[in-house]
Length: 226
Length: 226
DNA sequence: CGCATTTTTGATACACGTCAATCTCCGTGG
DNA sequence: CCACGGAGATTGACGTGTATCAAAAATGCG
Image 1 (cartoon, rainbow over the protein chains, first blue to last red):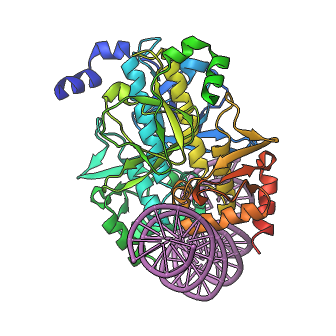
Image 2: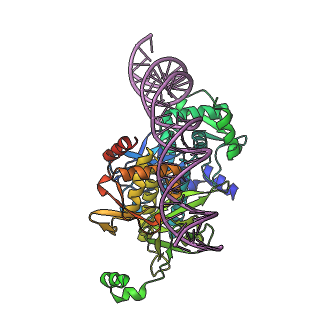
Image 3: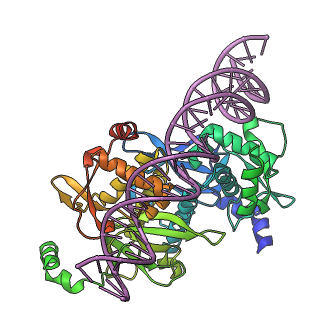
């Protein structure tokens, strides 16, 4: 099954023909705006922020979508988007559901369940100390899904961080605090810059996957605060 | 008595026969636990907190359900609950979907859309200053839905506040800070105790509905902080 | 080379967390 | 009926983590 996947994905002619349009978006680019007309998408790679318009007219962070998440499922009902979607990092989308106009009931329920779980995780990103919040956000972005293995290098995960402002909006911190915490994680060895070439905003970091527990997080907060 | 009146007025005697079990829960009572087997429910009145089990085994606030929200929709797929549900205030539930085993596609989509919007609002509850967060939470609890008018008294909304600890979990503040902010809202005239009789934890407050904008909130923060 | 944008770093202030005492209200039992 | 104890809420004093304001550094681009 793994072999089949690899073959069809990389070279199978049928897969190539069946493949639909897969738009690419670069960091900071608008994917769609609230009230726009369109369909739902699966996030194949990268991450997306969704913003809602508040009663006072302000745009504010609403939720996050990472690899394999579905965005814009509400268009199946209303025909138009509820939120505004923006790329947090370079990302690739695919129309959803694939090939059908109406998704199977199970498929829709899976989407609902996954969206709920994601929302709960995002809410959790706004609890606790700043260093831990930023660390958990990085882990979430680096850990795209259980099904599809993340890009890995020697047991570590690679991640391209969103802008500091975006990370601040997500964690309910300020841009400056996020920047400090990222530096802290670097000094603590949790985040390791992979290279200094290319655009600084597009540098990828290696994330120590064993830094997921809170015990080490306490160590970060204490040790690196000097 | 009162219930009979409402039923006969809204739907006639058939509705009475078709009516299903409507369990009641008191403040702090567990409705269901994660992993439990059961079905989905509509919140007819009151409010419910949903908690998830974190990777480290802790239970932490995941999301909120108020009047007319659906909880446990994931059981339609998995047969068991993803979250743990607890009553924030006295609440009444009703099995969902009513009378059918499988909900119509539109109904499911509506649930999805509503849940997403609710999650976005809850995320918004963790932004900004403490006084404003608590005020917005109170408004959310007092403003159950657009379709079903809230209990009203002379143009004001009535609300029974959850425990300070629950409010703290939702807003990502501490119990003490929430208590201070509730006092502040009282002094500012946004919250008016309706009576001093009965259990203190079950006292209802009148909420000034015109205090929804942020301009007056700024006034609270400045004036009452002395 | 100079300007714009993003990020980083520093100094200071304050809003909130923490710890602790007190109060209210209830249930229980003498 | 009142004394006692417990749970939840309120209030106070104090410390600190983060916001705020400000400046500099890093990098891309014209």
